[in-house]
Structures are given as structure tokens and as C-alpha cells.
Image (cartoon, rainbow, N blue to C red; front, side, top):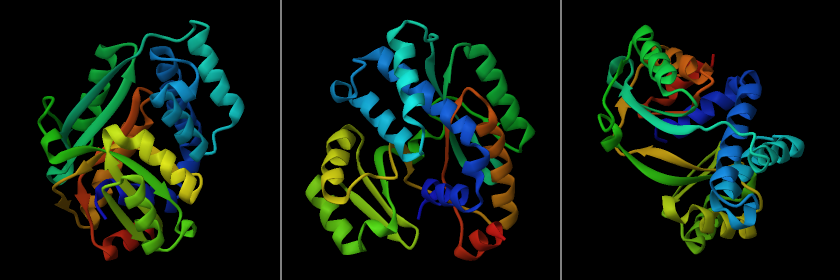
Length: 248
């Protein structure tokens, strides 16, 4: 499994999601509000909003929170956010993409640059690492959704491009522009997904040992703690042995 899906597994197994729950809800609310403000407030008529709501449900975000975030956009109470992507290198030359939503680009740029430099990384220019990733749709199902063959068949019929199945579950990839259609088709075949979102999928990876993984996690933790940061993606690769030690 490539970097970002392993990273999701780290978050899950180490219970980091529980610790970050309030921040996760805040980031999801921001995405829902922005999506509703940019288009129709009805998720069925706004693909971006539909995906944001779907992702929020997958993270067990309460229905009231979701509705509140949409109403904020409709009522004109939403702040004017802009989406800015930062790219750089973490410890040991790992490529890092940081996606942000901010109402103050100077503050965000300063914070992201500082977090990179304090945690063994370097912030680069836009495009400095982006060529090592592809923009894809990612749909995640638990292992209980079916065996690898059944999920593969459902994914092919839905128009997906690739499936990675393991004991942790199934990660299905599709073209970024097909995410709404593919996820809807899969919902009919496999039920509600755990996660549905656009991701940066690494096309080349950097192998890390245990020390390297610990250093990288410090940087990613620090970035994820920042209120302006929506998502962090890296292109690390690590052996099962290193991953087990990391969980110990």
C-alpha cells in the first residue's frame, strides 16, 4: 500500500482520529460550508457538497453539525475562504502536499513554512513535488463489505480504475472527475462507504525506516494540528515490520 492509505491505517490503529475528532469535525464543516457556498445548498444538485456530506457521515459527524454547516453558507454567515496548496519535502526527502482553507493567506503561509522548518522539512514552490502524485478519487470500504474478488467486480462495474484490498479493508481508486458517479454506483452495490474523497495518490515513493517514520509523523502531526490545514498527504513507503514497531 502506498503512503497515504498506510497513513490512514496509522491514524486508525493509533487512535489518533479520536484525539483529532473535534478538529476533524471542524475541517469537515469548513469543507461543507465552502461547497454549499460555491454551489447549490442541496447535496443532490451539488456534487462537491454531496461528497463532503458523504465524507462527514463516514467520519460519524452528527447530522445537526452537517445541517448547521450548510445553513451557515445559505445564511451568508460563512467566512471568505480560499483554498491554497503547499508543497515541500519532509525528513529524508519525503514529498509532502498540504491542502489548506484560509481567510488569511499570509498567516497560513507563515505557519506552514514554520512547521516545515521546525520539523526537519523544507517548504518548496508550487509544483516542486506535485509531479510525484496523481489526483484521484478514493473510496474506502471496510473488509466486511465483501471479499477481494466481489469488491473488485463491483468496482470494475462502477467504472473504477484500481482496488487495493487487505485485512484492513478495500481502497478503490477512480479518475478524479468520476468520483461522484463511481461512489454512487458502489453505494448501490456495497452500501455506504467509510470514506469518499479526492486524494493525491503517489506515483513514486520514499522508503523509510522506523526513525524516519517517527520524524515524518512529528511533521504531519504538527501540520494537522493547524486550524487552516485540511489535509496532509505524503509519499512514504514502509515495511510491515516498521509499521508494526510504529504501532507498538
